[in-house]
Length: 322
Image (cartoon, rainbow, N blue to C red; front, top):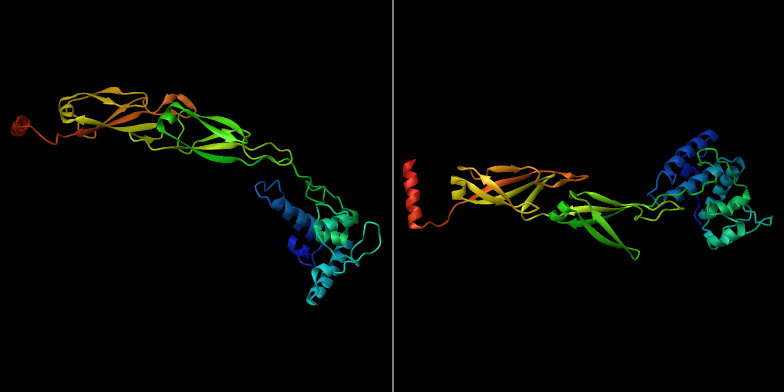
């Protein structure tokens, strides 16, 4: 059985006053309270340990008994004694009264012998007999003091799951089917979703503790790259292939959008790389699906790679006219 150093647990010296012990307890109890550490599964165990240490050191009779035990325990260990053979007779009180010599076995054996409680360690129960040995129920410090702590209902943990969609799905909205505990969940991804957008599914996260409500499930959206469009916020950028003659003489080109192609008038003499703004042809704005960003079409003028003799002659004539 492990010896518990209650002074070390509270972070005080063996000569600490009652005031110092109480102050240390308050600080440690706040720090390790389960409600303050909802995501730490070990918080409740540390909180109980702090309570146990305070239960002993704040009681003059228990503290004196514990201090005597400390010296005997160390002497016994230094003598090479086996843990299971330690003589608890001078320290423990059996439920029926009188003294007993204990060769302890499992924690369940001790609880049966001393009427122990899950609020106490085996070490405490073996010395003081659990709640039957006079442990106080003090309360009075926001539920921190004494052993009246009852786990409060705690909300379950939120869960996160990544889903990938394409740009068209982000534009029009889409759904994803998930399976949880044999149930099928259909989750809608709203129009305008971006990479990093989180969609909440209430009550489908981790199970709550002590009757607390379940957490939420969050779908974290990832929008896959699109071969045609580059996205910048709610705006889109697209390259539009244009022949030399349309760029020089003017004309029309077809510009792709996420709702179909549209015609764009190209003025004569348009330079390669010129950008045209098509208002409202970008992405819908998240949470404002009736508003849209813009589409920026960049001319990508393609020069002919081969010329016929006639075309060669005409280009030569144009060069001489400059």
